[in-house]
Image 1 (cartoon, rainbow, N blue to C red):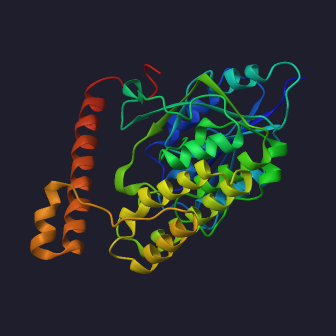
Image 2 (image 1 turned 120 degrees about the vertical axis):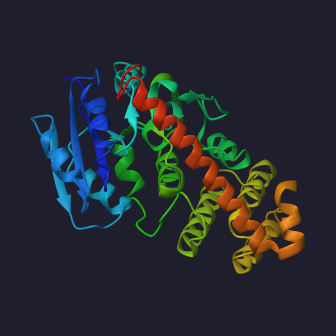
Length: 339
């Protein structure tokens, strides 16, 4: 009998996107699957919409609002699958995503092999998703994968992974303390429990860009800055547990430097801790630099106002791109057409 794949969907106020997400899960060509939706106390019609899809294949549960990580943990506890496919409530799976990854395992799958796949970003039109290969899009050892991720400031989207139940249990639960980057930290632990990553390019995921509404968006949130700092320290610990070479340490320093723009100058205490950590790793950090567009604001009004202007203009740009793409979406084909 073929392995059972559990597609786990945490959902909170996702009424606008959940129907297409569920259709993409139901449309998987891998027939032996269960789809579990856990509504995290939504205040819109998310639960009612999910219940419209209930069947022998689709199960729907609800809980009091606890956050994304706790909802994922609950979804896993309700699952029975031999393999786990995580799927956020606004993203889409290509029809053969799961099947291609399962086929890559062969007839005698190694349960410690961690499977990844390609992913493309879109706003409203999945057929216009941009698939941009990175250094993580290949078969890699654990240490090399983490070194590339941290040293080159890369990541893999949550739904791109397919994880055996054995690896999922070995990694432990999602960290409910992390308000952002909970997926980055979680899949580091999955990686550590694995024997390496097998990349399957034909296994496609469509990742919906959400701008400032994304859980990973830090903005001016101190709680998210603190959670991000926790995740960063764990990342460095994980890599050094695998490889403490000069190359790995240099990747850790680059990782710290890349993220300092989110802490400087608002959280000089965290910046100071990062400086000390970089020094112990054999490197050094520099204060983040603003582009010429904001340097004059810094010269006249200081770092904080320049940073606020940077965030405002970035958010305005995202809003404009999203609005234009949404307009084209409404004028053209809707939903899953073209993927």
